[in-house]
Image (cartoon, rainbow, N blue to C red; front, side):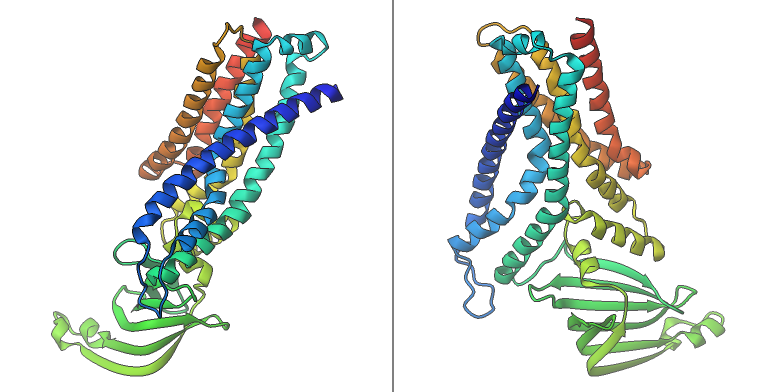
Length: 379
């Protein structure tokens, strides 16, 4: 059995590596073509010009994230190819007569799938987030910012007596925040003050240090006591200071999560950000779905090897293997699309986050077990 294990594992691993390499080369080419439009542009900071070597480095830093997304599909296609080829050449028939029963074959592939589960978790939770952040910081060095949408990131924080809503327009490569606006509200929802600063930095003592600050305070007491008092009767005090220290628990990681796509963050960062949103009374449905997708997505590698096993029990004619490999490609693409669709539907319909994230994997696991039971055990 050790020889059989070495044969199957060697064939499957080399096939999966070849498929993944082909996909990554294709995405590398597409990303590089997309980056060519930025060549020769100056960020306005010194003589920083975006050159071809910067584009190549940026595209290379995106490879771990592509590998994380493509690993289940590569596992499916590579395993289907090996199983179908062994069946076509009658090698799998010889292995069956040598004692490789259906359950033993499934056990062999599940152990191989467990290896790719661990690999997917390591890449998606450690390598890809760090690589993605390095890529964004590299790009920001020549575009002067990391931003999202037209107004940047919005965060909320509850403190001892008042609530704060914070807007950060951009995040520079050296972790400087640009276009910072802080709105303070009392317990009744009335605005108390606004603080605006073109630049702010993170402090080590749970605070932000703002520069060239314009601080505006609103005297809402008169407006609250006087029935029918108009906004023009409220007192407004405006001061301009060189620096201002604002105590806050909003960290660099939270701002990064708000500015970057949640699916490209580490599981622990998403979990901490969800706790921050819930503690401040904000909806966290989207981030909870992404969190559970990060938990369940590596397990899809087990589903893929289960889907591939029935192909070893099919009877192939000459040249028929191509059609089955194409079917494997379609199954992998459909899983990827269904995984994204259920995330969007779950967010719109307010489904349980874990259910929206786990449903595609459960559907394909049921299909694979049905195919295994009908094609392998009964036939």
